[in-house]
Length: 107
Image (cartoon, rainbow, N blue to C red):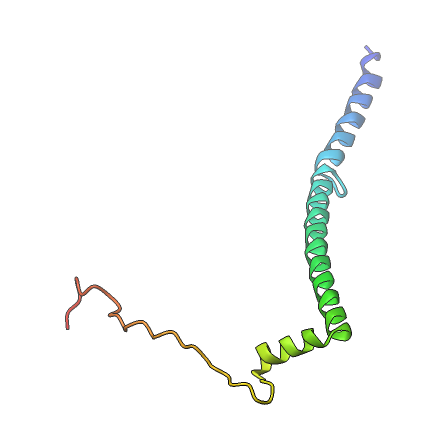
């Protein structure tokens, strides 16, 4: 009759360990959530690294070449060289349309 006591104790210990493993602090659920956050952070870091690389290349262009500075001055500041004529092409505005098709509205 006393032979089942050690087995019951081991079974309870195993059950307690399984509960902690699956649902406890630092358990499998929390580990998976952390893995997800790490993967999201890696993607964000890769995106920011690409942005930094592009900015570094732009800075290097601006430091090394006069053409890059001139291009930026023309596009962002609207500057022109002496003797040049600046033309701005403006697309015709689309005709104003009514907000609705007139159905179901009382005027």
